[in-house]
Length: 193
Image (tube, rainbow, N blue to C red; front, top):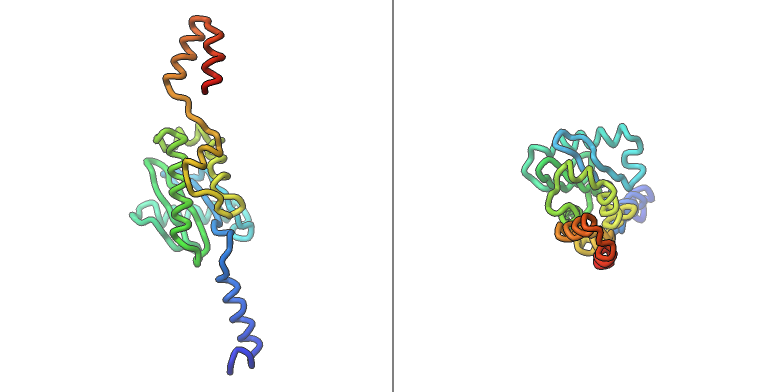
């Protein structure tokens, strides 16, 4: 029997090819966990994937248990492709569907990590991440919007977020101007920054 003579088989073949169609919606979720597996940040882009907070936390717990002692960069769990990276006391995860290109997911993960590294001055650890959580959310939103990858260049992300780190030297000038009462110097330096 061919696919044309059996409508049920033809329908199944059509659905399989539709499931493998390329899509812009490549990222299903992004989350950052601490070294105990506690959630610091999470964004789920597919509302049908894990609709409740309980299901999301259970998924994150399963992912953490599978990956926190592993020395790999990729995992397959619950029908999802997961790429991950650890740094000091943080674990970064990007989740896509099982047929998703791992290199695309890894590009998102690397962009996220490098952008945060630039924003946090190479001090990517739990304390500094929590102190700058508003910037972290902006970085994630510049990289991914609704599951669509918008940017993969960390320099571009930081420019778009406009999260400029003021150098210690500039702080020194502002502090010196404040102590000496030089109000004109403060205004000139603010324009430069």
